[in-house]
Image (cartoon, rainbow, N blue to C red; front, side):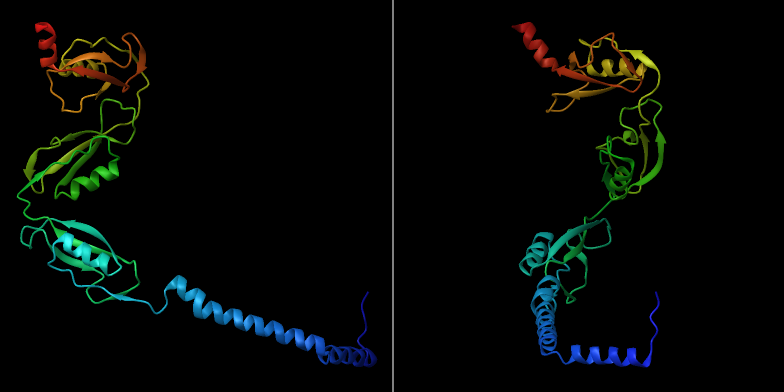
Length: 269
């Protein structure tokens, strides 16, 4: 139903609006509401928000270039700042000191800001190859390149692996000292194979022979309980998966070893 806007109706509406506007209770309530909103805004703008954003609070970043890393970290911490190291390897730059920082010295930053410190690790005529086996491909690449080495290729391993897309082999081997810029080839696992194989009995074998036997069947091995370092003449005294078990290619067989000298002691006793 539509209402017709006549002259009488318009006069009536205007009169009603005037009555509301002139109502002292409405005016008082509106004034109180405006006052409350104004006070709330002032409190938020003056005290609450600055406490979160630390508005107006800043720290001049200390100059730590040419400092030792321990001294630089301590000075930044004392100034209310955090730090993170970026390792660089340049033989023609000062060694084992901070050679750059971000943000730069004297820059104004908020308290708790992280300052990135570039430290030169020194001469790289030879580089120790890091161990990246069992690492994801992306992290393995990063660990190789950060040592001043190059990635030659990342290839799928011919032997399946239970851990897909993780490094299974590397060349050169971990721990080798090689010239800076040497190319490293990585192989990664593609997951377990579809073919079933029968687990052989490798107990009593030297670990090198046991591993060769397992790899010939496209089975992998992992040595456990060997905290003092692996030696190829150590003998296998126990295997985690019993002989005769059917498993998929790439399955890992756990091997527990016994030291050669322990075996000789047993004979002497």
